[in-house]
Length: 442
Figure 1 (tube, one colour):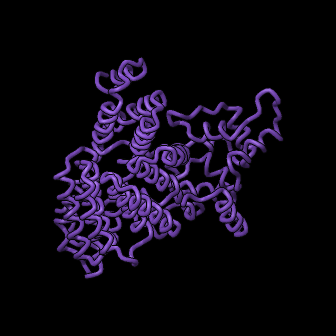
Figure 2 (cartoon, one colour):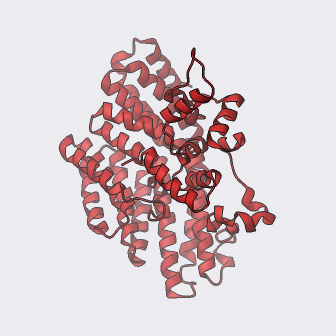
Figure 3 (tube, one colour):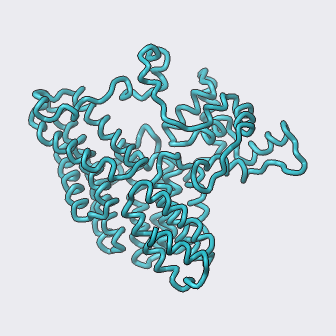
């Protein structure tokens, strides 16, 4: 279940008792929970959006235009299409509320770890992998005569770098690099110095293989995606990693879900859940249950679908950044749980519940998850069509199309074209016609 402001407040109080500043808490939560800075600082103070608005009105009363939770939400959603740009005065006042610098409320790239003079004091705020840039994979297989633990760590860091580039810029940006990276690891797999290093390298290659599978899914190359995922499952089996093997099979189920084949997805997911059992990380088990709910939705079976979704939420209560594997980093924060819950509910034709979850996801999603924001807006458009709210559907779809073009996501562009089919009964309306022109002609 998504966390409450109170639960964040309790964690913040514990950290404050240990001497953490609000700035340090917000910095950790940006990384751990994938929050943007404005949300992270607010939650570090344990405030809801309504409480932040109330505090604002106490400090700067304006009887004609008091601030509301909705306005706080608009500023937090920005720079997303549905957000509103906070003015300098707004940022200064939020900074006063949150006891921080106004500039810290603007999310941007952070390259401070490259400042060697600052490594001593800032080490606690950085991930261990930031201490040095990855070199493995950049030299090629020919330059690697021995594969040590340090080399494998570089491989892992490079995979994670590609993963985050994919979130922000799309699969076309990293697809060929990931393929080369995977090939390098496979070519040097017989050059490890210890048996433990060999198992770790196989797991690292499995991670890269499943990532290549997702990139192929985004490009709608489903046969290729299945091949990569079966390779990932095989590597996971050889390294005795049941969780990664179960997850890789789960990714295969998504090739069937994207084709609308719930029956085939269900068959793969049954095997994946058997592998995951009770020993896999909570993130893996919860994610598989969510996929199961989607499969039932395609089969027109809402009762088991809703039961699977409820189980996914119960298991998600045990998810943390520490326990979630790196390859499932997109399912270790509330924004992603809400996003996938909303999508599942649209499959199960529960649009009102879906819109609530999807709006929560749009509020919490960090700006770096561009493709995921596009997909969430498409799900929101589908929910609005199911409710007969066509103008709102077109507005959400228009925003989604803009983001889908930015990342070059063929998967989301195809979903938008499928949405147009559902809008055919309303093609005599101006805003529907505008959406048709935007998606099909521009």
